[in-house]
Image (cartoon, rainbow, N blue to C red; front, side, top):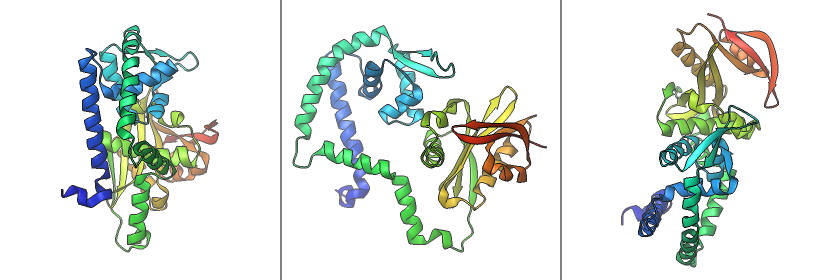
Length: 306
């Protein structure tokens, strides 16, 4: 077949086909046992059966799905009355996800089936080339350096991107498409979580309430940001630029785009890292006397002066 000749390039397609075949067979098995259960729900239901109560961010990390994908699954499970939620006693802003009695009853039926499915999968993958081991090894490689970063680095090396005399085309867009939002989240994760050691939970807090932006340079993702409408005005947050593109005025392009979109707001403000305050002053912001630590980093509140 044509696709199979490309080998590594078709890896994602092969894994998708395998996943789809396994999903269909598992779904058929559930139906044969008269249980209304979707295979895609398994990671969420299984983690909750072990953790009992967990935040959306923690759940997303446990199952390895993006925040939007996790939210989508939770909405499905909520409609099926398999999950509920409650506020965290320690932090009222945090929503804890729990299983319902209906879900716990279903798990009692599912557990013996999961043992059978596990035995069948072990038998299926018991080949000369251990599939489970290979996938784990690839996942470990992804943790050390994700595919996006690998592809970007190779492209830049081959084209000597930073030395090119071609004019960089910077574009900043407000985004709503889940695929683009996931790219924006990946950029923020690299800058804040990986480089600045901010916790993932703290970094992604309140994402569902925010308006998101993605900056590209010559069509390649380069930066991200968001803003939220608060009681006392519009708050700009999470301006992040990948290391490769720093010093190319990407952050300024992002900030100016958001300010343009918020031009009718009476008050626009942000919490700037102190070492970046001069950047915001240059772009029309003024410091207040409100200095504080956030995630161990010194910040200052700044207001936009129209």
